[in-house]
Length: 364
Ligand SMILES: Nc1ncnc2c1ncn2[C@@H]1O[C@H](COP(=O)(O)OP(=O)(O)O)[C@@H](O)[C@H]1O
Ligand SMILES: [Mg+2]
Image 1 (cartoon, rainbow, N blue to C red):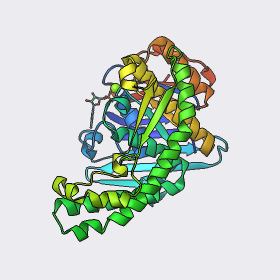
Image 2 (cartoon, rainbow, N blue to C red):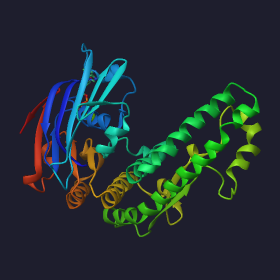
Image 3 (cartoon, helix red, strand yellow):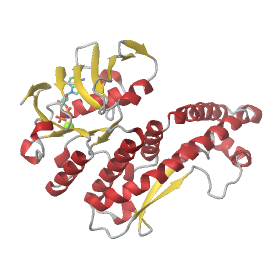
Image 4 (cartoon, rainbow, N blue to C red):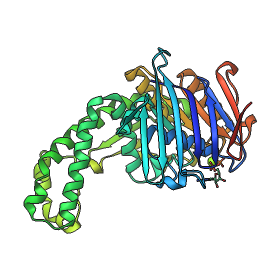
């Protein structure tokens, strides 16, 4: 499902009320520092994922002096623009209301399914730089969109892990801890299969986009998937059992799908070690483009790409290259910038431009 046709943002951050009719190619938002550019990117991301990348608290998101914010989007299938859906989110300080096509829905995944979004911000490098959590989210995003069957075992795993860890923390008897082992193991093995397959499917795309964005690197990237338990493990149940005492001492479960990771290597060296800062940013772009291309191939719909402050991320040549690739892949993109001349317009027909000042948006 994937073209954003309309986006309405009300009482969100410094934005009182902004309405966008989006173009199917580049959507460019230009404004000075603190104008509210990131807020717009944040609003779309929040609607699609239920999470902000800047704040966990609802009251930070709601415009000062207001009691609630409202986000609305209309999306259409790129192959059949008559197939449309309306997504809505209303947040007050302590509650969130979600709607799809006028009906209340309980789960954020209903919105996420209809709005496959990728995000590139100055923080995106967390994917390489920080711990494995961001990389697991990256894998799980792909699995979620590629296989509807992925969510049930993933949810079962999260629930069982939470219960087991609570039992460990409360120092309950061993039997009450091990009550969760079977479901934990079954769901971990399923989640593991999907993640493994996803990384296998993704790798050729990643190789292609690394070559396109960083032709100067002569080595091919390799992805090393780690399940979250030692490689030679034959029986995960037995491993959990053997580590019960250690788990009890630590108060949490050491091994499992919650410890999975992917490492990226060039010529057998970690990407972080071999790539310059600029190349690390390009590598993150390559990861997102690989994910977008695989998504398009499997789901037959492109993703939407949000890019906050593109000029801060890439130099002029690489900006051009990225924009060319986005156009080639038919990916609708929303890009923010402080100055228009930093972003080349490749196709005026599929471009829309807005100026933003103090949270007020005007079409250009
Ligand atoms: N809840 C809020 N209500 C009103 N203004 C806010 C709120 N949260 C943040 N702001 C203000 O919104 C402005 C826009 O910030 P931001 O989106 O980061 O701008 P930009 O990305 O254009 O630099 C900032 O001046 C910030 O202080
Ligand atoms: Mg910003």
